[in-house]
Figure (spheres, rainbow, N blue to C red):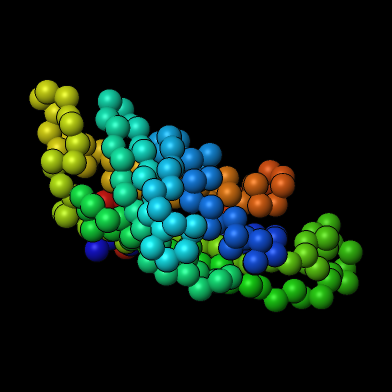
Length: 186
């Protein structure tokens, strides 16, 4: 399994962050390639199923996912339910306030604000992807598509986290991301 973890600090209440991340249909606002997320069944809790419509190059694909577990306000687990062995989670970890900045530093306003670490964790096995899942143009091989698409996973995960932070905090800032990759492909 290949693994990718993108995490950052968010200056928002952990409970609000959790509720925000539970809104899977809202993810279409954050990804360059995710056009639409439809709820097929459920209310966001375990067993909720979604259809995620992706479009890239000349290819469209609808992935089906299911929420496999929740631990409010700290964790949302999910898996892809067809065509590839993949899954992951969102983790929300509250951070302790340091009680303010005695030096008068410009960042003192964030010292008392609620904060948490948010991490998007993804695990997938590209070798498990089903070639029958895509209707490819003539003369385009599934292996070529896989080779081109897998590296996009990292940039898309980073984009999703950065854009979610912007909406959670209500403003734009440079977001420092910690990225862990256990894969030679991404």
